[in-house]
Image: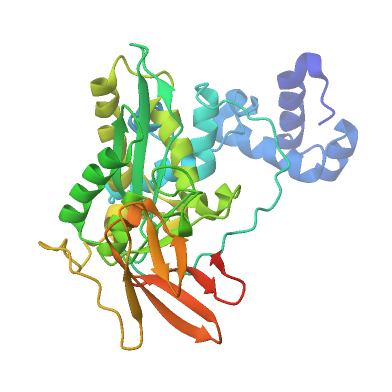
Length: 383
């Protein structure tokens, strides 16, 4: 507005008094002072309402904002951010869950608050390639597929190693086990996972990578004592493709969150580190909303398996037409004058052969297909 800036209030006052004197018309005055008619009428109206004080510029800030956060709400979001380290989306979801009757701010307002408080570290933008998913079937209910892995080992403050073992239900993202172990030996892993089986029941299948103790590259079908134990419980074995961690992408993503929340920096010893893992598991399952399951919590979707851990592991029952052979103590079987190495993990177990083509046989252990034997080429073909 082209008022004389040195005497803005005086100029406005002269304008209004000239108009109220009835000596000038509004159009004439506005042309004289170089303002629009709406502006002229505005200052006349404000003068009549508040006198000379009404000619002072008013703040243009909105008098009411429905999404403005109270100080108490701001403190809640700041405290939750410091505790969990979550972004605005997850913090808003948990706030609405815990305070269903309270007015809640917008996601952008929460993001702005966290930035003002210095609680957001800007990240460098990365150009990511679209990762192709692995050859895994679609799951539609809990306990159809569990995923298992070791998070990379790290040293504790007492200089001892910690190997975090994690087990998760793929459908609900429910973290069934998060245990810090001093090593990754098969017996210790079996002991802890068997406890999960007894508590939550048995899954239909377990997906793992190709590392120990879940798989052995030198054995047929990668069998280990641990995977043999799972097969005998009626669990199918699924594995990632070699060098393709994206085949277990949801588990890998959980591991990144686990590391950020529990191992930076590591705890003083294994017992203290396990305390962190226990707290993380409770928060991950019961509090943290997951975008992949429509911002619900894993505990809202997970249900125990209807298949209980058996009191006695049943022996294999093969269909009619299958020829059974007992694996020797060193992992070999005799078949059609052939001496075939199967796996030392199957020592003293019974496997079965079934002919699927002329001279071509499939090998089974319980329900699990182990490989093929080509009698014409005298060759055992792994799958």
